[in-house]
Image (cartoon, rainbow, N blue to C red; front, side):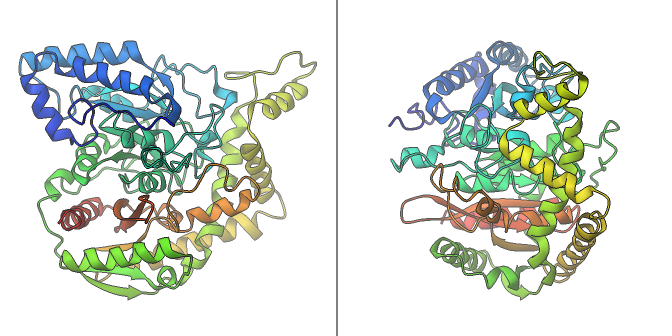
Length: 493
């Protein structure tokens, strides 16, 4: 089995961080073009991973050449000017296929640009292509894509076989883990950035809801999903988020960020030396991986000089159920726009408009998406709205209040990101509902709108990564970055 790309660390971004690459580009006349060429070659070499669904070779070369010209005149636009990044395939990139991993959008060329990718363009980033994902973000493994499953590069390097990279931003995580690019952007509706980052041994951060514009992102569950980043280091995450955390008049849920620069917070130790641990998560018994993650959390917290205190958040027991009721209800509404009339896939030879709708959706949506649409429509139907959707929203409010209350005397909350390390592809084929339990640790922060970051803290006996989640109060993104950087520093010693 072919492992992840074998190019040297200096030629890829495997061990380099964004600031290291930026320094190299300042002294190399054709640095970005060279780096981009090697990154594109690495994509070709790593086809087995299936991280990318579209490679934007012409765009990448044009952006790299423009970056080199700026560097020759000592006018780079930012620290990421000329550095290759990957874009999850639910961000609209003008003139590029944007499929959201679905057949129903497999012919959709975006006529406009998402705000997040526009900000990255303006910063001089080089777009290598669009990465694979679970269809419309509905999945925790990147197995449910019209373009096939993505494989975990870490498992391939360890010769363990075909393991999932996590999802739904699995393609983005795999691209970074394989050393193809320095960073990738993704979206996080219920853990879709943090879970794959954890499975691939990376840093992944979802900022406070509203910090990154959702304009130009193919919608799944609008009140939950947020753009974010997947990188190798906490510093890289801070650099990228500083660029894309901007208020946007095109997005009614966008908020102004008034806190300190995330990069600046890297050098400011957390003022309150206490981390809160939810009792409800601590009491779960789900196997050795979870025990090892908790052990690492306590050890690293102590090394970094943090006190750990156990707090009770009773509403956590309802988080998973509340999340799925809300998420798939919103999905049933958002996905109603795909009717075969205005854009996207259209069924052929339909005799009536009703038949066109039915056949387009039956042929264009995958099984998991169809299932969630049907259940979500049921939750929103007359007679069931109050019993399910409204009750879930009330529990959501209660959970948010309890989680914020738990932070009264602590800088951040901390707990494992996932109940297990990455699992083999196909493990949940016979029990698809069991896959939902993979989200038990990730969905609470989406319900509460809080910022959260996953940091690799341990490895299994086989060498697979285990991550810890650090979650902060609303607008407390800088605190999350600060705590994560302190834990990352002691992890390396």
